Amino acid sequence: MWSSDDAAAPRMYFIPFPTPGHALPMSDLARLFASRGADATLVLTHANAARLGGPVARAAASGLRIRVHALPLPAEAAGLRGGHESADDLPTREDAGPFAVAVDLLAPLFADLLRRHPADAVVFDGVLPWAATAAPELGIPRYAFTGTGCFALSVQRSLLLHAPQERVASPTEPFLVPGLPDAVRLTRSRLAEATLPGADSREFLNRMFDIERATAGWVVNSFAGLEERYMEHYEKDTGKPVYAVGPVCLVNSDGDDVLERGRGGETGAAEEAARVLGWLDTKPARSVVYVCFGSLTRFPREQVAELGMGLAHSGANFVWVIGDKNAPPLPDVDAAAGGRGLVVRGWAPQVAVLRHAAVGAFVTHCGWGAVTEAAAAGVPVVTWPVFAEQFYNESLVVGITGTGVGAGAERGYVWGGEEQGGVVVGREKVAERVRAAMSDVGLRRRAGEMGERARRAVEVGGSSYEAVGALLDDVRRRRRHGG
Image: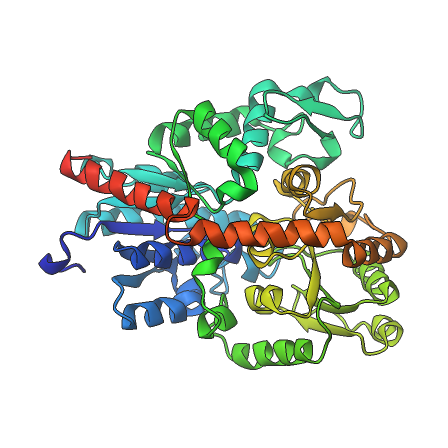
């Protein structure tokens, strides 16, 4: 896999959890480190290799030391039928359990890969604890890619350690999250499931401590201009260095890499990107609100209808990405929008859309990838968290950086049980919040300034540029001293 001529280049594996929200930034990360002299191998399932292989192949053709190594997902051994190799491709949420088992069965395959082709470092997804311990006899240092920012990590750690959520009387009573640099208040209705009373928090605590012990440092898709105090806080709290190297989406140029990002190997992806961007080309600057809730969100039908009518009544042009390719038509929304809306089913070239001059705001679920992509583009956000740590990200964007406004979601959905969740935000609130975001000059200014900070961070001498160099120096130092 590597020649003796490449011996000076740090040999690094990058292995994500197989779903777009994790695999996309890890792919960007691998190309980022390859561009700085690392010999990078991105470890993916076959399906994700087909989706993400294009930019990697172009990077390799340009002379970078980078490749994809595809592992077969042991689906049948886990009782998973149908050849599904990515979490967003599962036909039903009942398949999530077997899928998780299949992902865990990748552990011996990854260990075998490390033994056959040892590396100088592994950057592993924080939700794959087995990647931190595979082939331990090799003494390869491991670096945890967190998947979210240091603010959310700090909140989650405080909730697990101090449990203030267990001392309030109702799901809507606010409580202070202790020990943070800012006064952050949440409610139980806005917490990740792992921190809710009755959850097996001890299991999550043990997993958290296991990863903290195993990792040589935290690799974070973030930058100093977004959450520097929380980087310092998390570093101090865990005793492990934080390497904030983002926004990693900025490794994508404005060519094929950004147009194909996430769907390069799929039929029709290029045509869909051209359709969306062509539509945006016909709209005035900052007149379009872009709406996307990530690859895993599936709203109940009544919430889809409320969202659509809210967008139509907002008066703004909109591009609305509905993750479910099989979602039914929305004739009422189309009629009410009067040609001001473009509905996309399945996928859109999100980074390219956010960079487009016509886009003036982004309605988002506050997944961390979306938060950093909006920050990199300098686009204000309307925050609508759905599950996991997304409410924590909302607190950062709305309460601390001031680059977003809340849509009004006071509770989330249970992943897999969305149909029972009903309507969280009604059409009137959707329309009002979109209008507010599109017309707020101060919000736009702050978001634009955040975009400038993001771009400076990744330039030569910027904080993220220096963090990449510092991690590579740490890998080289450990190689010289035997781990």
